[in-house]
View 1 (cartoon, rainbow, N blue to C red):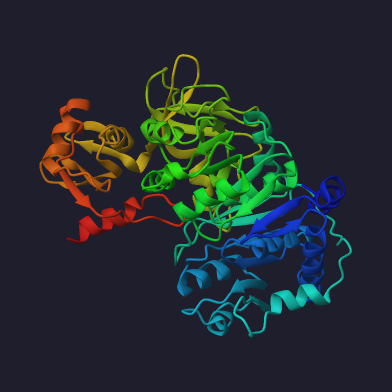
View 2 (view 1 turned 45 degrees about the horizontal axis):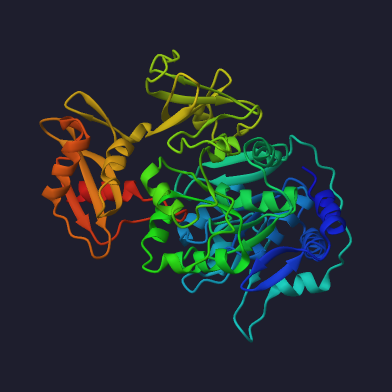
Length: 503
């Protein structure tokens, strides 16, 4: 993907149309190239060369987008890092990728001088500072640079992006995508949906994650207007949909739950929405159907994909009412579902989802062992479980690690969660397997109730017995005021498991 050409073409085609909207300030398609090229020239003067790693540590905002695009314009490998990472995680990721330049926003608990001292490859740290009266080297660099197009001899196989999975310390796992891979998500969306330059999308997923990065790709490739949230807030999200007449968005299931928990959701005008997508975790059709009452003009879509595979890889077809299915793959990839012996399973049977095609990542950066474990015989073993119906539509059952073996019986956590979502008092639910001396594993549920609703654990167990086989009914249920979430808004089941094991 040639970022420089795209920026120049969009500047001519859409000119004064807003490309980015952030805190009621807009940047037009005509202004966007100059901001990107100025930063790109500044980075080159600081020594950034083709193939160098450019670390980016920012909350959502225009600066994040300028950094992505300037890095790509220079032929660098951009390394976006979640703005919630701690110092040890940042040092681990920056050291692992040998970053040479680091663009970061101040955070009170971080000392960038200490980080620089611990990452020997770092040559420069560029600070983005929004504090009034303090220096802002990022904006100073842009102001002093020239706005002509930069030149870099880039080919499709060059490394473009390293996305780290959760920023773990000690052994970070970086997903390496090439410049060809930058075309993957936009090409898939041409097949799945009907985006046009008339659309307005609302981005609340962190840009450091693939789901957030897709919004930036949509803006460049389709000429849409992108409304940006620096962090997800359900009230503000709906206010922005109403204010800017947003036409589409994609978010994860817990975000829909948060929207539905608002007491005055009905006061917002959501009639501009054409389609809304749920992705990133097995979803409950009940949640989406409840949300649909407030945006009846919108089509409900369910999607599946991974950072490793340039998502979306499957999406419910436009016009379909089957929100439980994630649809079929696009022509960019092949998908099959296999058992533990790598034999394809029959329709209706659950197995591991395998995918292949040029959209599959190049590798886990500097990690040939993990790469070999995931990529075998041309297929990527996703670790996701699913099934196909007789017509080839795919349904996600959950992650392999969400499969609970209770007394020899297989229980899929998302299936149990879906049953609880049918209860009128349930707002959120997470189901995990916990060690059990008698059964090997036992099913445990954590549930958040809606405001104003009451239900006991025994009430909920009784309800579950009406919808699930006995061996799937949780042995214990904890009712809680809230559940832990990660940065993309997904419920953090690993944290819940650690909590149980620590008792």
